[in-house]
Length: 168
Image (cartoon, rainbow, N blue to C red):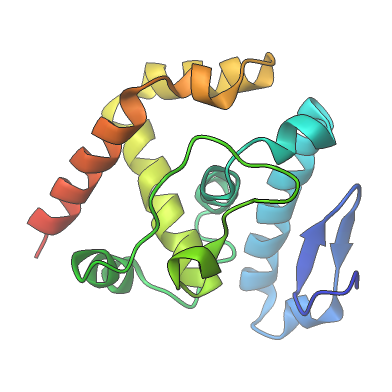
């Protein structure tokens, strides 16, 4: 594909490997929706602005809108157990071309990182739907991610961890 051992990906175009069908048509559909989400954001914002978004946000959003696409090997229960044991990402406010934090920065497998990121995006959407919509529209309208999310990120993440740790 483009030098990575993946089923699908987006650079300036959407690339699909025949491997996308190895887990069946339903999983292939989820991957496609996931990657189309990335392509849509890239088309809306451009390469530079997309690179400024943190990977947890980009992957979490794509996994959220695709109903788990890209994270199908990790269940929510497994992600909760991982978070409870202290194996989780910590949301940062910026991305970058060179110093983008990814799953490996938190010693997580990609599917675990995607599932945890999706769960946090889902949490953000659930606790304040209008605020979540405002965040997405702000980013789409060119606001810096850190400005759009403001200082609430740390409190939201701590609340998310609290909610996850309460679950049985």
